[in-house]
Length: 226
Ligand code: CTP
Ligand code: MG
Image (cartoon, rainbow, N blue to C red; front, side, top):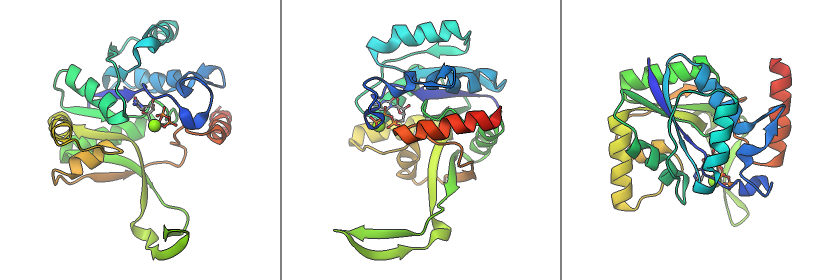
């Protein structure tokens, strides 16, 4: 299934504490952002890449795209205050396609087979997101006290890619904006409209580079894959 991908890359990486956009930090020999871009560049089903960027970082990102011969980037609109705004800026700028994927630029270890599985399910069913089963026992805690133990069987930790038929995500984003609704992922915006969203079991390797220790996991994953 052919698709276009939106990569939100306009964050500031506060939790990483690197004093710069964490996507520019190297893992092995390349910036995190380049690792992510190369996965989609190498997937023949990916027909276009949209990157939400900060204006002041656009020239540097453009230089990375040139250096690593990435040819699929179709646009780099200006991101917004929140991740949702950054994704929306790309969705508004692109032309309608059958399937669009949204993938955190900070998740460089996603694999091409998993991307394609998500795109297929989204095309057939409308919406599909990546996730993994919760590993630990999960509890509800209020003011430092356990209130409940949640049935782990029904708990998933969700990731990206999140894949949708384009018109479903575009409508969900427009309506969220009108309602002033802010979600932490795209699925939340689509859930509000009552659509079914399918979960596709992904890998614990598909971690988001968020804090310093994630860089250690990241280096280990790269070493093991080599
Ligand atoms: N992102 C974005 N626009 C924002 C916020 C985040 O495009 N306003 C992007 C980030 O660049 C990242 C992805 O969304 O690729 C996931 O966000 P997150 O991991 O939270 O990254 P940051 O927001 O940069 O990090 P932090 O929350 O620690 O500041
Ligand atoms: Mg953030």
